[in-house]
Image 1: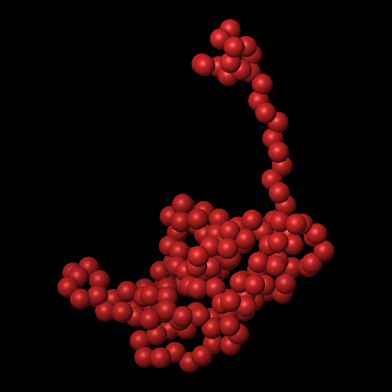
Image 2: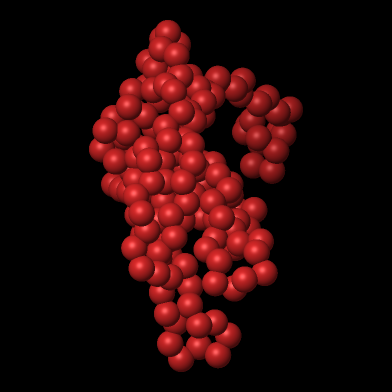
Length: 161
């Protein structure tokens, strides 16, 4: 499966759109920001109560092929966005997108470390390109040598059995 001949594709440029949604009957917050759309290339003008974050880049890395393949063969291939609240003191400011990835395992690591992760559907043409990249760069895991244990006297090769 690994030919390793294809170079990494150029970084993919995209923009995302956050919509401000009212949160009724909540004494702690009046609104929340939801990731509602993505645009490839240049950013469209925002609609009312929306903010567009542009200049985002998705870059693929050969050593992450397994995570890309896991994502594009899932029922709903996705792009994952690490999102943090705005550093601005203005509570109305939209969140900041820190990272973009198509790697299923990387998104899982982000969540395991306590980061907020949003996802959007992966465009079909990107999914095909990422799958081809993953297939070309996939390396099967190395087989590990089987552990050998001292005999325990009960004719089993494992301690405690």
